[in-house]
Image (tube, rainbow, N blue to C red):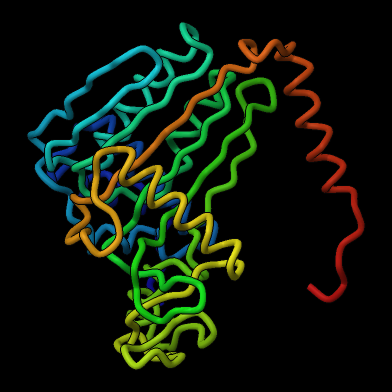
Length: 288
C-alpha cells in the first residue's frame, strides 16, 4: 500500500483545487477540511471525494441581499464553498448588530462538511447552526420506501472559550450517501439496515441502492423533513421530488450572539465546558 505524509496530502489536495480555479487561500482552507476528514477516518468526506465533486462556475461571485437580520445569498450556479464562505462572513458580521443573524442560500454547487462555517461563528463567540438540503431525493420517509428528501445534514458549534468550540456535524440519513461511493471504491457492501433497493427491500449492494432511511426512526425523519423545509423552501430553493440537481438545494445558517441573550459570555462558555467535562467523566456503557 502506498503511503503519503499528511503534509504531502495537503499539498496535493491544495494544488488540485488551485488547478480547478480556486484562489490559494480558499484552496488551502478547503483542502485542510478534506485531509482532516481522512485523518479522522471519515473516508466519505476525505480527499477522494474531490474527484467526484462538481465545483460549479468558479468565476461567478455569489450575490448578497440583506433585510434586517436576514441575509439572502444567491450562488448563481457557482461554487458551494465560495457561497458558504461568503454567507458565513456576512452572518458573522451581522451578529453584533442584531444579536442574531439568519443566512439563507440557494443555487450553488455541493460543498462538503458543514463544520467549517459554524466553527467560524463559534471562534468569534457566537453559536452557529447550519443546515442544508443535500438532494436530489435520497431519504425515504418513515414507513415508506421511495426517496423523497435529501440527506439533509445539520451542524451546531458552541463557543467554549479561548477561540475553541464544540461542534456536532451529522447527516439526518442513517448513513451518508457518500458511503455508496466509498463502498464501491473499496469493493465492499453497504449497511443492510440502512439502504433500500428500487423494490423497497434492504440491500447491501452499492449499485442497487435507491434510497436510504433517516436516522432515529420517526423522530429522525421529522428532523430531516424540517430541514428540507427550512433550508430548502424557506431559502427559495426547491424541495422533495422537485429537486433535479444539487443546484436546486438550499442552506440556512444561523448565528446567535450569547451577549444579546442577556448572558455573561464568559459564564456561558464555562458552563458549556463544564457540561462537556461532566459527560467525559460519566461512566461508559460497556455494551458499546
